[in-house]
Amino acid sequence: MSKVKLSVSIEDQHLDRLDEVVERVKHAGMSVDRVMGAIGVLTGSIEPEKLDSLRGVAGVSHVEASRSYSIAPPESDVQ
Image 1 (cartoon, rainbow, N blue to C red):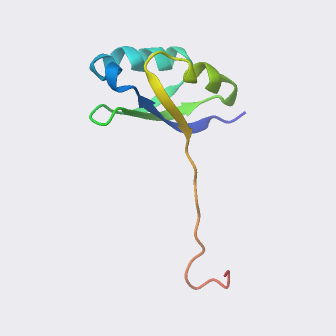
Image 2: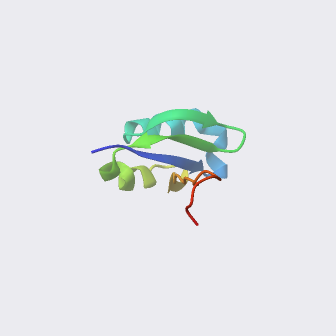
Image 3: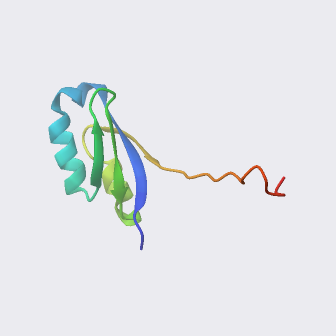
């Protein structure tokens, strides 16, 4: 099964211990691609069946799956 790309928001009160939260989300199964400490957001991917355990990690405020969009080129006939 393919991994889900996602963004994870960190609770404000845990921002001073961001490294610990990163280790906990990795332990929960998330592959962390980027840590944006200034805004308290991590991006990465995880197996879909591990999403619930990620949501339960201390310091995690919100988990949101990434969405992709595509727009037809201007010269296409799609309306």
